Image (cartoon, rainbow, N blue to C red; front, side):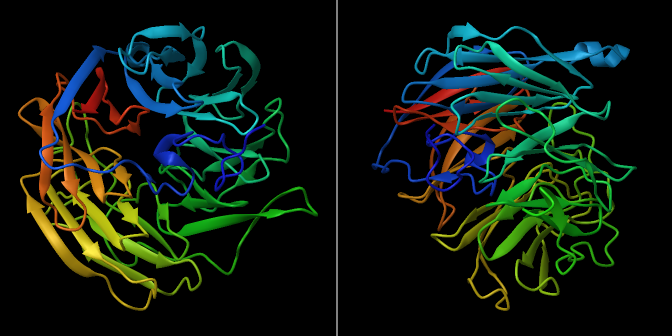
Length: 419
């Protein structure tokens, strides 16, 4: 067993899960940035790649899934590959993993050293040779959009629900057996879960919720003193994944969209999307700011938050606007606008290199996706490279072992190396 130093339920790796861990900070110490750095690209086609995560040095795992069968009401499947860290070629792969309803799932290396996949209505536990050692069909025949792992090792997953109240299911990391009865949430929920320690955070359609480990009841209990109304009186649609920085929960709303191959122009709401900040101590402290101020604003992912630099990035993917704010630990002090970019079409989760303050992000223009390195403090573009992907990535990149970044979109896996 080798627990992560911060996220105790995860493996001790630089990036053991999506967004680097359940707080979804999307950052790591990283490497320094040298002037005149050049980028080199290695790539391969993939079938609906969702994310890359890291195990031991040199271990790189890729999650993919099928989708075409879903158009005919048929069940879909997922697969995990271990890929070569330089060439991206498959070293070994799991069998096809039953999934059922289609939605991008989740992948993580647990503190036990095993690999967990939640996709569709199924959870799968694999060893490092990608052999299945446990399997659990989840209670609801609906897609479950990934999971979080608590410090005590419990796995918490949730169905993707837009009309009926969502349901949390808690599984044991050794055998995927339920550790408590399912927990009915108070609202439907689309966004992925977040967690800190042994507390799970849920984004409902109107409110945020958290469920805290109850040792006596051997389950999770709703914190009835923290149910902030993040939507207020807005006509905006639901929020996406939240980021937890220790003082605040950050998220963006207007999550309803019609993404097919790009988020550009995919917004459906007649309003502007907003960046929202909620105090983790006082549910009445809610700050909201429109990102672009343009109608039809929409996103499908979380903001990027740097506690070290006190900067938050938010975006309107549908209208191609990216903005940065400076914030304070004191949640009563409003963030101030730092910089803004128009015509910049980002939509994916990101990777922040804390040491250098460089953020890796995507920019989609005319059926071409580029991976771009930006200076977090100024917004200055440091480098960019085009990828062969024709679809805009909206999923989960990952840093590599060799001064590189793995970038995934629906039809490509790319390795961007610093020369």
